[in-house]
Image 1 (cartoon, one colour):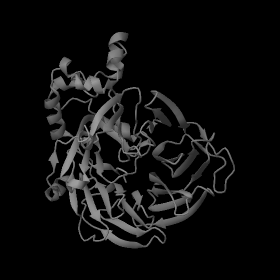
Image 2: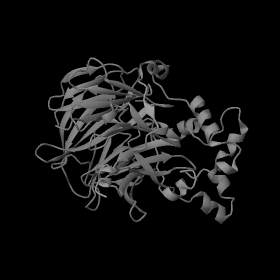
Image 3: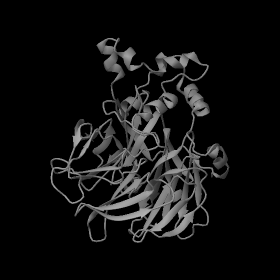
Image 4: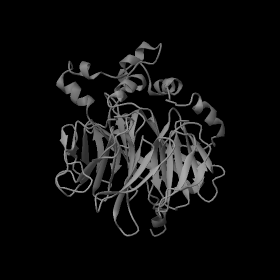
Length: 445
């Protein structure tokens, strides 16, 4: 991945931020009130601008993000078209997105699988590296964890309260002595990626730091420096249970390494090295295979025990930053800066089964629902697509909003989908609820 340090996203955001006027159209400048301008407004007006949007508000016609289209000199449709035409997708390989579009399948848009429930403006979600977007994790339909600058917050959708869980701006050190922990800790670490599962929060840093916290315990449980390479960003993390029930996690790093840690012993368990920086990994449901994607057009399917490459997976035209296994254990997906998500059958990797296209940007996050019925893919900005797998990926729902996507996550019970929006003015947490088909009950009436 690109070797940017903390704070570089702010520069990227200046280029990609929805707040900027569309070139040649001065009226788009009025779309957003900057924070500095907002300070001059009266309290009542400011309160209105920061209010949440409920499902009832949306049904009555209010924009789900609270953008007051009726008071600005541009319609939502006109602004959307301008974004489609002028958004600049980041590519490591020039023109990869344009070339990849030729292989994409046509899909039927317009379905509704998840309906809008709420947009929470008080829960801001930030991005520390513009290529890393796994910064929102739902552990239940009411509990969400997300990154805000140097802190990891817990948001309860049930009672509307946010709580700081981890702050890495100051001194970070383990509360107990464990083998492999750096007892001196870190100072001013910035989080590049995170994962939350089974009451464990794991965060990665820009210098190869790993910081772990058990959510039911006080203090930091474990922290270490995985590498001292100059280019050592922790790019992705995945928490899982082994066949014996032990809690482990996998860390992908820009130093071309993939490391597995045993959280029962707080020790490095495995370390595999590759020829290019690893941006994301996904472990198969049976724990036997791992997808490796990174700074190469090819993905790798490796043996989880030995690290030996089983297949080189060819098809993408740029670098990949997302991957995910279907619960069926046979199908997996990869997301790429060529603006496509490819679906693969692990039994035959000669070519992808499907090529799904985005609208404006790289596919930086992919999630399957735990029941295997839906696949969601998030672009870098503005769109999340939800595909009906039973339709052979032919039918989809398109979530359409404005702003950079910091991450997305289905709740484990599949009831809720959360999407983090990073934007100076309209940053928020979008919440969608699954629509269930209860038609079988009608026959009983």
